[in-house]
Image 1 (cartoon, rainbow, N blue to C red):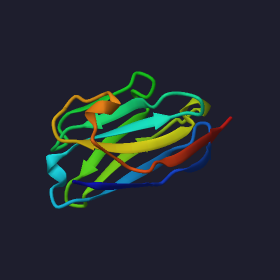
Image 2 (cartoon, rainbow, N blue to C red):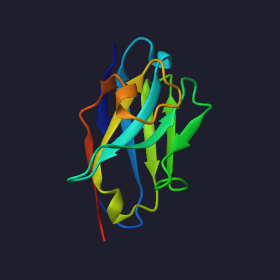
Image 3 (tube, one colour):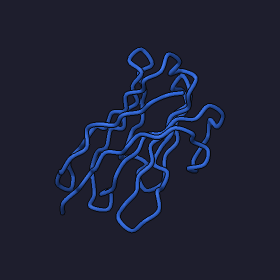
Image 4 (cartoon, one colour):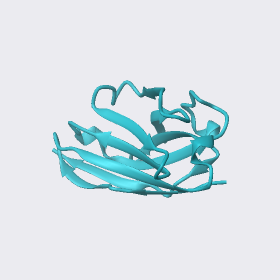
Length: 124
């Protein structure tokens, strides 16, 4: 089991940067593959990025590749998403998620645990 709490969202302008954090309450953070998803108004939740247990392997949605960086600090039980060159189309609620079994997980059903989300709004 793990509880996830996101933070760091806010209102920024296009071209700005933002770093999201996700604090995990668990004694075994390294048991979990971690991911970020987002949901824009009127849209389905979509994959953004994931990172494996020790942080050696990452993958990104094409829409954020080269602009976003996922990382984790296993000593702090914390997942991060560094977002640079933000665009209005990045506006969404961002969720962190955790799974035990899917190191390349890109779909919602692969993730058993979810945070409550943090709002990111990018103005043009």
